[in-house]
Amino acid sequence: MNSLNRNTASVNTYTDRIVQFGEGNFLRAFANWMIHEMNKKAGFDAGVTVVQPIDQGLVKMLNDQDGLYTLYLNGIKNGEAISEHEIIDCIQKGINPYDNPSDYLALGENPDLRFVISNTTEAGIAYNADDKLDDAPQLSFPGKLTALLYKRFQTFGGASDKGLIIIPCELIDRNGDNLKKIILQYADDWNLGAEFTEWINEDNIFCNTLVDRIVPGYPRDKMDKITEELGYKDNLVVEGEQFHLWVIEGPESVKEEIPAEACGLNIVFTDNMEPYRTRKVRILNGAHTSLVPVGYLYGIDRVRESLEDTVVGGFLRQAIFEEICPTLDLPEAELNQFANDVIDRFRNPYLEHALISISLNSTSKYKTRVLPSVLEFIKRKGELPQRLLFSLASLIAFYKGDRNGEDIPLKDDQSALDFFKDQWATGDIAAVAKATLENTNFWGEDLTQYEGLLDVVTKNLENIVNNGMQETLQNFVK
Image (cartoon, rainbow, N blue to C red; front, side, top):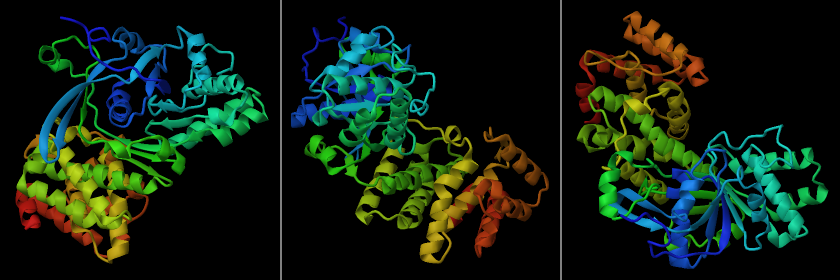
């Protein structure tokens, strides 16, 4: 059986216009797929050169396959469960700067280069005081990028039209702003001059981004079946869900250079990404966190099964559409579409998300993902969000550590575990509710100050503990 490469597959080649730091599963299933779509459907003509950001990586394997790999997209699409696959051909080559530092810097001399994309993990956008300009290469990703930009600045004499559009995908807030700040710090540390600093500020665009697609990665346990289906060997097969969202905050000119709209891609260009970040945290992450204790104590183990259950699924849908969406400022149609997409993602038959696996640190998750919706609902509606508070009561019951006689494998900060252990040892349900809501270490404030909130949570908690989650939730959803 042949191995996948450009001799065995009929694929295209493209102009080298993108440098990408990171060769991992996420970028290949997310950004590279979108570039592939724009190349096919909109004549984007954007080839990618992948730079391995750390000493150990996949660049050799990628080059062995001439940059090619097969992407499987599995999930709900247009209301149906669909699995589809194709060969992605936008990556033209890979470079390991630890083996070939001169080849890496030479990328800055390419007159066609226009974009930089990165995903070097959350820790990748970090300042390393030990990095120097003459290192080959620098250890940090920002250090490497600064050296590349300086090479480009020197090669083209600081020409304004040779600046780059830099689109980091690392999962940190204001990723583009943070990356630019570190590059300017290196420019100062390395005495690269005021003209270079001005060129960075005036002629390069650093975008902040929000990225969203579940990428399970390399399907090791299914590769024999996949290889038989494909008819060729591919060591870089990657799986992703159907849903995708890329929010790019930058000037209007960025949108003009990326033909996403012509391809139907879910790329949002905006001058303010915060409403989209809030939407994701409140609806997607908030729904996950709200669901976990309710579904698990109900006797369900997986996210998909929770949505398929009439009672649990109905509870979650009501929480999302009636109590979370009304607290957000984007247009109602946009919010409803995103919420329906979230529900489809939760129903994805190709992904098995265990509720217990996403229960880690549930108290802090509730604070950041759900509590803002609770407080905003109270502010806007002048009443309590009953379902989100039922979830809070369920969370307190979850930390009792028992599901129908079986121990729950609780995972949280030790101080949180100790708190709940001590509280539940008293056997006083009302006291447990009051102490939990008063715990400012959990919530940043005393939640009993909100009129009626303690009574609602206490009543729900007593019902859950005394009558069980199934009976309580069935009566609640009625």
